[in-house]
Length: 54
Image (cartoon, rainbow, N blue to C red):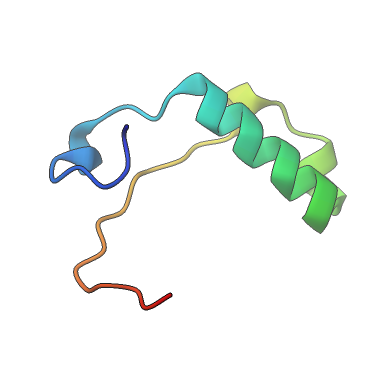
């Protein structure tokens, strides 16, 4: 919903996306990611200006 929209940079990232991001980072990167809460995580949407080949 949020990502892939032309004005995504102006949108607030949904809380569930922040929670999921923190959980994935904590699981796979470990370290300090295990000590922060979702409220401490600051995220900002980015706009890709070129297609990513899959």
